[in-house]
Length: 113
Length: 113
Image (cartoon, rainbow over all chains, first blue to last red; front, side, top):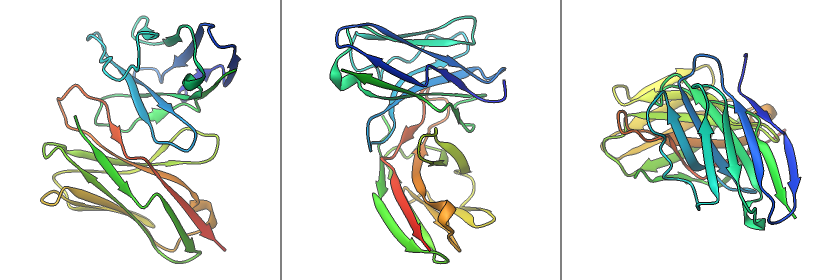
């Protein structure tokens, strides 16, 4: 596609529920990243996929967070047993290589009530 | 891992004036330094980047300078316009490290008419 597509754009969930966030990267981009942005804060790295290599999960804040990338394209970020501190904007980006410009999606705003 | 410090956190200038945002990084092996602009409700957008084999790069009203010895780089915006108002993020990356970009905490720039 023309850009990185994320869905849903907004998600309100009850504390304790599981949520899935989706990212469709730019076609042909082998690198895909998830970042989290809390209100007024910077970009917190979560996870990075590069081609067929094992993902870099070093930024995931707890074992309630997981992500997968199927067929080297679409990625899903799953948060289990959501907590109020999980409320944030979750941003996905893709690039051809890690040291080439990222293209970000518009994000999913997650609110846990 | 890489640590990126960004200053100032907020910056207010009058239309037509220049704006300068500075970042420092910790990993002397870092060799790619992009800058992103984030407007309200949108994902960050790459506006300019520089690699460690050059000291300065310009694109119209925007320029980035890099001092590898001091491990800092700066974004310069000249003849600012109200539409430059946004949050700006710097980032640093070390090639072949397997890491994703590490971002600064952002600078909120306000250009007043």
